[in-house]
Amino acid sequence: LIRKAPSAPASVKVGWGNLLVNTRLAGGPIQIGKKTFRHGFFAHAPSALSFRLGGKYVRLEGWCGVTIGAPRQGSCQFK
Image (cartoon, rainbow, N blue to C red; front, side, top):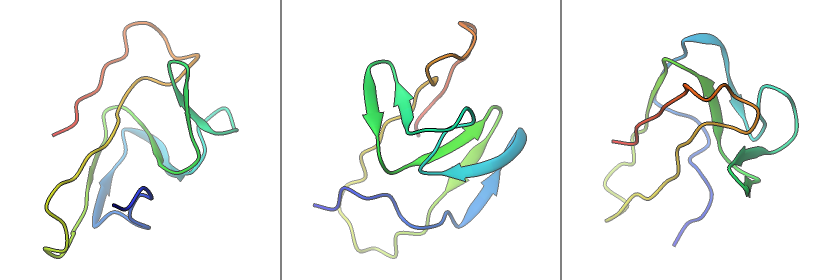
């Protein structure tokens, strides 16, 4: 079990600004609802990140969500 995100995505498309690693746009740790994440990626919508895992894993789990302080009309998908 590896709890840390891969160090860099294979490809990144960020809708506005730049991809942030281990922080959110307002600074500080990434937060989704009341859950805080020390490791992860922050990307403003519409964005897409893809990762090459090299066949090393049998399962990929993750969280996606709208960060605290974002407008209510935000949405996200994890595929």
